[in-house]
Amino acid sequence: MSATLQRSEDLSSHPPAPSDTVASLSRVTKRYANGVLALDDLSLTLQRGQIVALLGPNGAGKSTAVKLLMGLSTPTSGSVRIFAADPRLTTTRLRTGVMLQVGRAPEMLRVREHIHIFRGYYPNPMPYADIVRAAQLEGVEDRMFGQLSGGQKQRVLFALALAGDPDLLFLDEPTVGLDIESRRGMWAQIRSLAARGKAVLLTTHYLEEADALAHRIVVINKGRVICEGTPSEVKSLGASTSGNSTSRSLKIIRCTTTLAATTLLAIPGVTTVEAATTLTTITSTQPEATLRELLTLDPSLHSLEVSSPALEDAFLALTSN
Amino acid sequence: MSATTLSLSTTQPGTLSRTLRILLTEMRFEIIRALRTRAFSLSAIGFPVMFYCLFGLIMNRNENISAGVSVAKYLLGGYAVFGSLGAAIFGIGIGVAMDRSAGWLELKQASPMPPLAYVLAKCVMAVVFSLIIVSILTLLGITLGHVSLTFPEFAHIDLFAAAGAIPFSCLGLAMAFLAPPASAGGIANMIYLPMSFLSGLWVPIRFLPHILQTIAPIFPTYHLAQLMYAALGAPSLGSTLGHWISLLGFTLIMLGVTWLAFRRLEQNS
Image (cartoon, rainbow over all chains, first blue to last red; front, side, top):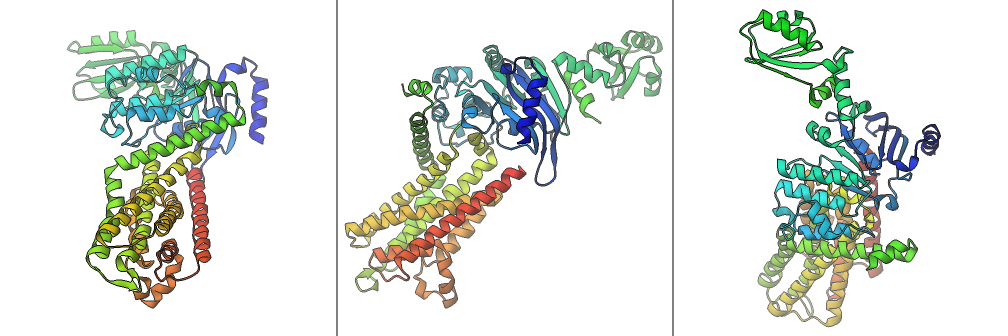
């Protein structure tokens, strides 16, 4: 149908190595039967060996995008291709691993049995021992799923995504409920998967995770891509939307000062002022000038701290409107 | 091993044997899982056994329902149907609803598992539980209720309980996809108990008010129970063929409802 036609147009207009494109959403619109427009002309591609983080507030369309890519839902218009084929085909699913936010897996099956069942779905599964090692499940293999801690459950779900040694992984909030050590362990695993040429699509609420892991971040809101790029590009884009082209120099200044917000806003370069009881947060596009003026005006100023905007600030700037 | 041979050929037999292997694995672990889940296995088996002991073995001791058929033998048929219905409604109706609300079903759908494997595994689980329940009831009837049962009679009620698990499983599936998961438990009880009573599984249908006797044939449990009674040599209503057609019809309707409900969820989720 029209979806396939659009795809072939895309191929002709984007000549670079289509074989490296593992998954794509091309101009996808998804309107649910109840009228909700979840995705609005959204395009997204995943390349071999690439980790892409999909960021967005709740209801932005992240899970709809992932559902379409997993073939659990069909687009209203546009096309969804995985390995240049229909995501709903079994041959496509054999090359895909999925980790979803699952409230409870069957609780009275052992970890070992869960992995065994999923390995059985694939003709060439990942060796059992490798899965257990990668998901850090040594020692809990004989426990029932229901007896595991939240972090262990999450790691079992990660193991199930790895079971088929897939070329493409969908990880929906993979490190929710993990302690710092396990989280870093899972990050290392995800990185090594990408290093072995696998493509990973990650949705996360932890901006730190997207920053640490992703080669490319795609920020979506209200079903549209707001911006995409490397983590540092996204950060600077976020800064530029706060109203200044000299985005690279945007800094966040935190200090304890007696000056009133109106005085602070009059200082050159200051774009926003947020006064809390003890700490005042100032964003400035000309940090040096702002600081000079600030210190002159308030000799009693203390607890000074200057930082670059984090991904979180960029994210908030991009998605708040 | 087999994995290497499969990778070499994507031919029909390779795919077929893998599909079959997946199906068997799903069935095996579904049965293991259900047996290990005490809250389910003890109540699914416990309820019919308890009711049978109470009404068939203790309360109506040495009474006959008709010439040569004791109450204990007659109720064996009714409680076998009751057990089969319970295993399907609680095992599938609630089990699938929970898998659905937890997102587990979605993960299974996104995997290369053939969707039919999931459904068949659940049905086979209900069949196995039905057989376990009939066997326990029969054993109790023979040892404690002086029930005399010929082997063909036993084989027939086993077969009927197993076959009956299929329409009941389809009812469970329809329920799981139609009802909001949070209310699955309440709805299961609202179907399980009234349907059992209204189709004469507890009290012979001829003792029920006339109006209830006329509506009883809308329930699949009624038809399966009549088949059971006939097999046990007890008085039964209707024709064998009619009962089988009704059960088949009910199965098809439930499959249709399941399909529609599933489609509706797919479009709205």
